[in-house]
Structure formats: C-alpha cells, structure tokens
Image (cartoon, rainbow, N blue to C red; front, side, top):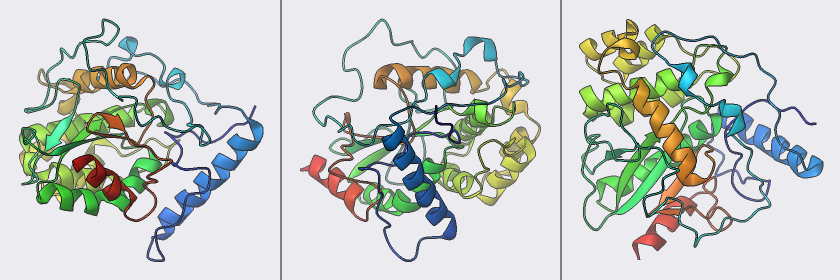
Length: 308
C-alpha cells in the first residue's frame, strides 16, 4: 500500500498539470510538483491513498460524535477516469438519503450549504436571473483549493462583477483529521460562515486571506486568535474578529458549527463522495478532461460555454 500525505482531490487532468506561467509563486510550483509526483505514484501503483494519523480529540463546541470518519469519504481522484459532463453533479429531485439542512445557517445561504456572492461582492446575495451559477466546494486546509484560488480567483471575480456568474462558495470540512486534533477545517469553515453572516462584504477577502495564510496539513493549523488576525487583515470588523479570537464562534447559541457539519454531509451525499476543490457549473460537474483549471483560460472557457 502506498502512503501519501493526506489531501483533497488530486489536480485535474491526466496526471501532468501544465504550469500556467512563469509568474507562479514558489509555493504554487511546490504544489504542482507534489501533485505530479502523487498522481504518478497512484497511476503506477493502482492503489488508493492511505492515511496514517492519530484520532483527534474533541474540540470545544464541535460535536465529533455526529461525524463519520472523513477518511472514509475523502478519496483520491483517478486522473485517468474521465468526468461524465452529462451527469448532473447535484441531485435535482428530493432524495431521502440526502440529509436535511436544519442547523442555523448564515443569512442568504442556499439550501445545500452554499454561500452565494453577487456582482457587488457581498455574501448572501440572491442568485441573479440569467447568470451562470458556479459552485465551488473548498476546504480551507486543502492545498489544491489554495492553488485553485491562486489561479482562478481573478477570473471568477471578473465574471462575477460583470454579471456573467453568481459565485457560490461551499466551505466544507473533510480534512479535520489532518490537523492534530484541532479540527481546523471545521473551525475555518465556521469562521467563514460567521464572516458571511456578520461582515458579508468581507467574505471573499477573508476566503482569499485564509488560503494565503494556509497552514500545512498534519499541523495544528491556525489558532482561533490567528484566524481572527487573518479576519482583521481582510477588513472584518473588530467585534466580529473578537468573537473568533475568543472561540465563542464555536460555542455561542448561533454558532455555525452544525451548519458546516450538515453542509459537508449534504455535499458528500449529493456529489457521491466529496473531494476538494470541486467545481459545478449550472449543476454539472466541471469536465476536467476538457477544461483543466490549472491551465490559463480553461475555467473561463467552461463557464462561457455554459453561458452560451
């Protein structure tokens, strides 16, 4: 059995992602190099990813008893397996096996755990008629999500601002086991939900800043105080940042911890297994055999194709 560092989905394509340009940061180059090596090992060995980690201890405010082990649902993507572009990525009819979202949710959140962002950049916006809906599922500890943000955030922002798309972020928590018992993925996603609720104009900046400050997998991740510092730097008001620093965002009656847990379970059920980043364009999973998001212009091309 091959043992690799834990992670979300592998990079799209056929095992050798193409560098978008010479201006990419050293961190990005390291991620791409790791992805190439990991994909090569998986392709040669024909085996899945094994995670060898200790069980995390409970964190105040996070009910770990209601969770399935994320190691059972986080799978490496087979780069040789094509994506079926005709297969809807989300259930279009009610399914009794998909759990209901009953937890307290941020203002404007979708029924399946998304945070829509409109042309003005404010979280909680209604989906604008005639726009292409782009759903992006991210775990704030996932290094490939950080790479996706680095390579595609500017494109998504431009398309959102010109009214082509409504961008819907889904902050999920599938890598809690990779933060030495601190449940960093859940804490980061819960903080993002709080920002969406109480400082919605700062949500996208907070998301970008969290990826820029992303800790390594296998560490304890950022502390609550450090997440609060990231929030302040992203323009989140002090009263909101203070709630994060004190950890009250995990324990208050209106905490979004339950929303993150339920949203992750819903995404896992709807998508038939959740990996990150996952991109859905108007209800159809991005066909990465045609549009490799690591290549310049490919994500935009896929979105414009959907827009007609």
